[in-house]
Image (cartoon, rainbow over the protein chains, first blue to last red):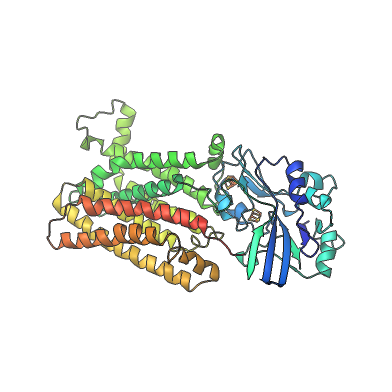
Length: 177
Length: 313
Ligand code: SF4
Ligand code: SF4
C-alpha cells in the first residue's frame, strides 16, 4: 500500500477551502496551518500564466525528517504516511530543519505537528478533509499500489510533476499540469 | 518574470517567513562542545605522547573547565527543545542516521570522561583536596593506572564530538548552505583551535604558550583552507548552493562573516601569533580571545545563515 495525493493545478481556483477544512478537522492551533495554497505567476502582462497549488507535507518515500529524528517520533505509518508520535517527540526541531518544503511546525504544546493525510479518516474509508471539501474536486487521493484508485487513474491520464524532486525526497504529492 | 506567493497566507511561527527554529542555544552548544572537545583532545594527546611535564596547562589545568563547558552546553541544548519534559526519549534509542541522536550519545560518553579528567587534576587547584570516600579514592588510583587507555578513548571521542558539531548542520540537505561535508572537518578544526586558545589563555608557562601559538597558527591555516574550499565547492555546485554562498558573497551575511569570522577570528589572531613567534611582545590574551570570539561567531552566523538558505521553487 502506498498512499498518495494528486492536485490538479488547472482546476484549483485558490479558494483556500482545503486550508480551512484541515484546520477544522484536525484542530490546528489558531495562526498555524498544515496545508497552504501557492500561486505562481509566470510571464509578462498581458501574456500571463498562473499555476495554483494546494501544498502540504509530501509524505516523502525517502523522508529526511524521519531519517534525522533522534527518537523515532517521526516515523512511517500505514501506507507510507509520515506521522509524528507526540509522546516521543522532544521538539528538537531537526525534522523541521530537514524538510525542504517547510511542511512542519512546532505545535504550541511543544511537539512537532504536520499533515497526516487525515489517516484517522482514511482508516474509516473517508477521504482526507481537504480532498473531501474541495469545491472544484481538484484533488485525488488513494493507494498507488491499486491501479484502480482515483490517484493511480489520474496519474496515468495526465502529465504531472512533484516539487523539488532533485532534493531526493521522493515526494508522494503530485501536481497535475 | 516568475512570482510565487502563498495566497492562503501561511505564517507558521518559527517557520515563516524565514525558518528560525534554532536560536542562540544551538550555536552556543556547538561552540562549547567543540571547545571542550579541543581541550580534551590536547590533554589526551600529551598523555599519549608522554609529554605531560612539558605541557602542564594542557594536561592538568585546562581539563578542569571541561565539565562546566559541557554542562552549560547540555543546558543550552535542553533549553532549545520545544517539548522539554520528553527529553529523556533521546536516550531510549540510538538512531545511526540521525546526528542529533549519536551526538547526544557521544555527549553521554564525553561528559563523564571530562569529569574523570577534572577529578584527576583537582589537586592542581585545591592541593589539600581529599575524596574522603574510599570508593572514590580507589577509583582515582584505578584511573591513574589506566590513564593511557582512558587517553585513547578520550582522544577518539573528542574527535567524534568535534566532527559531530559540524555534521549536525551538514546532514540537512534542505538547507543548502549547511549541506557540505566540509562543515565536519571545519568545526573540528575550529574546536581544536578554540581549545588551543583556551589553553594559551590559562597557561603561565612561556614555552607551552609558544608551542600552542604554533599549533593554533597551523589550525587557523587549515580553517582558512577549508573555508576557501567550501566556497569553491558551492560556486561549482548547483544553483541552490550558489545562492547559499551568495549569502556571504554580497548577501545579508557578507559583512558579519568576513569581518568577524574570517578577519577578527582568523586572520588577525594568526598575524598576531606570527608576530609573537618572531619574538615581538604580544599579550597572549589578544589573539586567544579573538580566536574564541571567532569560533563562537562562526557557529552563530552559520546557524542563522543556514536557516535562511533554501531550495528555490
Ligand atoms: S514533506 Fe517534509 S515533513 Fe513531509 S515527509 Fe517530506 S520531508 Fe517530511
Ligand atoms: S522535533 Fe520531534 S519529530 Fe522532529 S526530529 Fe525532533 S524528536 Fe523527531
